[in-house]
Image 1 (tube, rainbow, N blue to C red):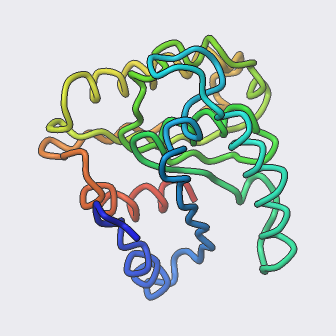
Image 2 (tube, rainbow, N blue to C red):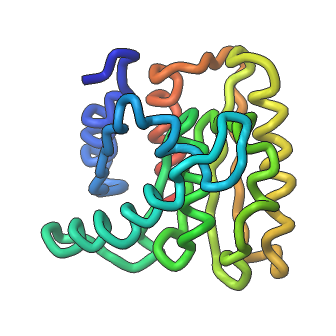
Amino acid sequence: YAPYGNWSLDEKLAIMAERGTHNFIVIAIDHGREKRIEEYTPSHQTKVGMGDGNKYARFLADTLKPYVDEHFRTKPERGNTGIGGSSMGGLISLYAGLLYPEVYSKLLIFSPSLWVAPNLLSRIPNFVAGKHMKIYLYAGEEEGPNVVENTVQLKEKLGSLFQNKSLLETYLSIHPHGKHSEHYWGQEFIKAAEWLY
């Protein structure tokens, strides 16, 4: 069920498989409908209240990933594991990735709803120090107020988490006509996935 469309990942993954460049297992997680905002909001005071982001991030790292590794032919090491999403999904993916850097080394963050938690980086423990991480950031110029500005600022602020700057690789992609929609996020996926992996 995708009332706002989807990223057409099946088609994108088929294109990448045809090229022979990358083989992925992508796990898509449906949100809890009326619980979506709570699930995707960090567990501290935010613009939309207190979220359940810690619980959601812990479920992904401690329950879902071990299940996937047990039942599929994965490469379970953190160097082969990433997390990503768009909008509120981009926000919670950033949060989960920074909370569990022992699980994820690659973050795909599209149009993150940073307005919800503008002080996100200062509100979570710095677990990433000493770990190599690649982070792909995307925003569209036609998404609405401050999306591009907030994403650019996020790229600049991420460096503060890494004492050794060589451990952080970031890529910032700004689409001049990009809107806040599944269509544009789907268009960006291959470029992002190939850079991350």
